[in-house]
Image (cartoon, rainbow, N blue to C red; front, side, top):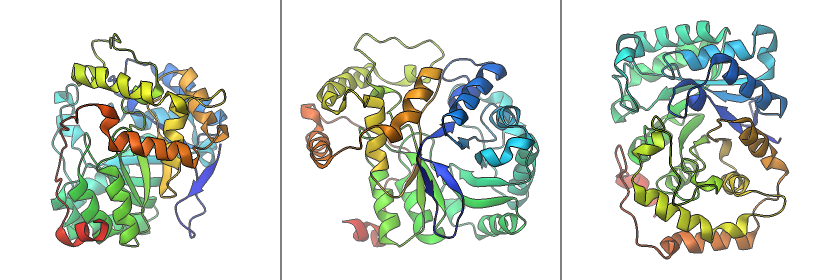
Length: 349
């Protein structure tokens, strides 16, 4: 396992591969008992993964409680804890079904209360990376929100701050505005070889504005497609979130993967190649694959030992993506604000 740092002033070393608690705490990738989740988390840590990314709304606090169960207080220094706040699950959690959003509350009092509650569930006195969960433009512009974040940081309740963008893919306007105006330490967003827009532009905005921002990448395998194991006949369990995808996503995705098989080597899987593609960018802090079994943990944790993608492989990927893999361009359904402010668009045009 290799490790990256946020900036030259931070001594926090973060594993290139992280463990997102979304899969084992929400029921959208199958059901896991606490014991099953803890076993997976400790296996990940034994293989060098030290970043565990939760959210207070994942399982209505369950993801944070799982971290406390997997790593008691005496093992706090072994892990890097990232979590998110902003959803009012205390008042609306019972109404959550599938991937339907619940109301948010980013008022200073609510954020302060959410952080204190998260610390209790986590069994720790500080959060390493605190993210505002799926913020909108109104929160980017809310000075009171960012002031309470600075207050909480100065009180030692978290070390590094940032935002998580979502749900779903998109949110370039919100992400770009936050990066340019607030210069967060961390932005978490969806980004992968098959879904490069708008993620690549967010990285370009950070570079163009000299922001210190590093990126946590979620859905790096395009909901499992880039693990290279689906076929046109793959059937997902009834409670699996991938059932929300249209059939064309599966059919076209398999055709794309067939053209990417050159990335598979005796000592590199398709899933590892997809992560290596993301790690080529120095602004990538850590990649958060969807982990739901022990075999995946072993495969993904070994990514640092697999061959990095070479120039020819990167070029072939670019050519395939530019040509839409020879398929009809798909109509993407983005969420959030998908127009960049003119002054930011000009920086990356």
